[in-house]
Image 1 (cartoon, rainbow, N blue to C red):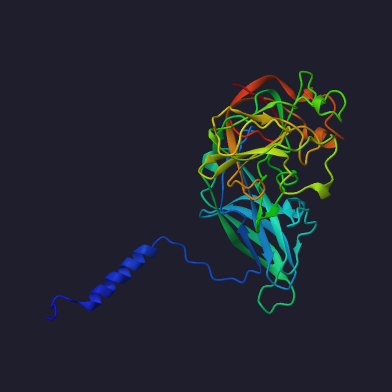
Image 2 (image 1 turned 135 degrees about the vertical axis):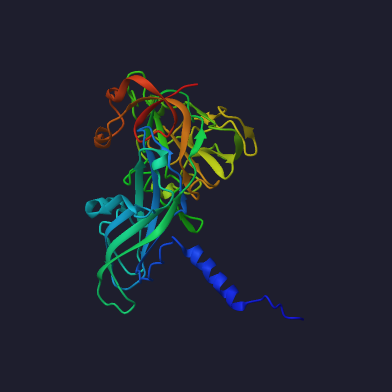
Length: 402
């Protein structure tokens, strides 16, 4: 082949160097590698912000933190940062605030910020933002801790580093109401770390999942502001008992159970009798498409009106509210998840397209009560406010309008 007299290897090299310089222009230099004994990652790669009834956008997720070295590690502070330059601190967990959010894999409070060798803790994160635009495109987590600063370390030293990037997902799903009528109370709702649903991670099908991350136990006030009137051991004394349970969207029934008796309130069943098959009582699972499933639990025996494989439309009556399964009082347990496994899926946030916000039961009063008896009408507002595309937060009183 004849050589090209215009070919200049040195010119090509200069051109490549210029391209490389241009491509790197404006990029920050990569941080130096650092030994990090406590490794951390988001439990799920993305989290959806959801607009609550308080007018704030709530971002709820978990960090999995594991100490990889024989030297005991002690978390001192975890900051949630906006991945911008310079990064802004969105929230900081330290001291009692850190301990309040820190859980063991056994669903108990950690009790200490120390993490033993091979030990894992879950940090339950709950962030709020004034608007959707205020939610960062990417979050980082900055750790300050005592731990092994090198592979040969025999004692802990102070360390700090950033880890566990997380990208907020698209907006939450829009659904219809799961019930009809007035006076529905969102019991055991989102989003605090001590909530019975929020902290309920379960090891199912070989992985840890938070199926009930956004679950609500719906109970109902009667016309006098009572959840129960009469004998609390009689399911018929509860205002919610027997209410129609509704499809929140068009979908396909994938699972039902319809054969379990109601439990005798106000007692939970013997834990030895609880299995994955009966823990949620009589129930319905709907496939809403696009890897989204709706779950309804604790229905009355014999009340389920649909069968697996059946197509239903929004508003269809699926069954009647009862007290079957692991339940101490009649209520509808409802949550949305990313799979058909009732407890083996990840819980998803959602908003209800339209409802009335009728009040708020005081959290301190509800927590101090021995049961659900009594007059809760002081939590009712004089005039309900119309809400659109919001998620009912814990102990809000909701009127589901047609």
